[in-house]
Image (cartoon, rainbow over all chains, first blue to last red; front, side):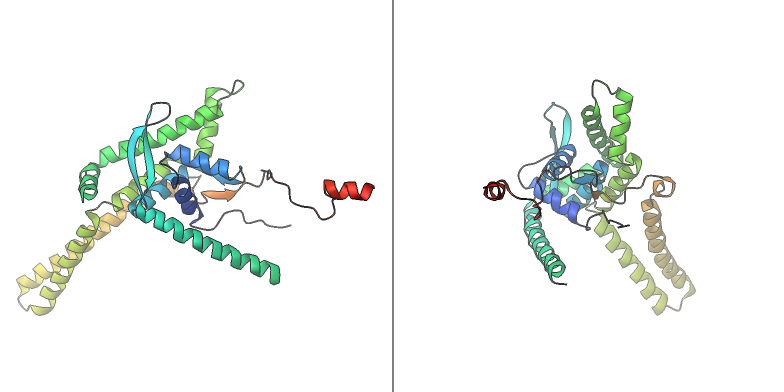
Length: 110
Length: 167
């Protein structure tokens, strides 16, 4: 029986958050929804776990947060990318490409 | 600079910080509950499903509080100050022969160690010992979901190939 490893590489969630916030500012629920929709439900996110990641990223200066009004006029905390976050996103994307290319090459040749 | 000053004052009140985290998580949970609410699903069932998808709310809240506390702009200064006191204590302890001064040195060494220990113990999250549902894998592949795109099967013919073969 094949034992499929289903948890993804560390740092992937951070990359997905950075990419999601690259378009516009969003609250936590919006980020989770956008990732789920973009991944076509192929990825399972434990919604709550987004928050420690968001707080860590904010502490590192990759994102900032501000309270604002949501679509249904509720007070919500919106996150947006900083300049450092945008730089980090570019670097992470390049890194992801390299890693995925390397793994694909190994799988094809080995 | 304005942001850093703002963060110092905004985060100085840990109760306020805690309240904001709770409000943020509650907002998310409420929207999740609404998402699960269907004509044939009761509010309690929807809330249960939302809680299940959200994960351990207490643990998440504690983690956020901890990260927020550790990332306080004054924290590096406090750590630096504690290290400085410790080093002064060591210097006093090594260089002096007077018994009273040695006591002061001991005190200067002990105080930062105790403060650091206190910070560490405060940082320990008790809910991680008692929780049954830990949030350890935030992102996983959804094995039950089927991709919306179809993978090309070499054994199957494409519509064009089928037309050609039928002729």
